[in-house]
Image 1 (spheres, rainbow, N blue to C red):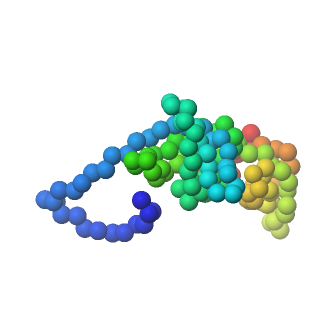
Image 2: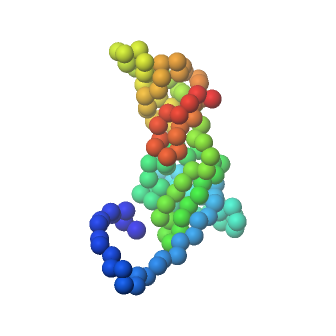
Length: 139
């Protein structure tokens, strides 16, 4: 629940309690900037509910209105969020060219800056890898 990772040697003969989690699908509606809460709509029940920015993690910067996401629930608590499909973002501006001429720094429409190949220009749409949030390709 806390995201803490630790090593522990488990006994072969001991019994351990298992937990039950559930994956659900929803769409991102909006972010409440005052409370720092991301609002999602459950696609099965059409209920709106909020998830804290801490639970969403880095993927929160990449969410756009209507984007479909998967989230893992333990009871009523969201413990993991994954984006379904590719993340497509528009390049808002090229901010800095690297000395090597191979990479440039760009600012995307969501305000995130990243390094991309030099052939990417302002106005291009790029695909961001949903696993490591790095440049994947140009659309």
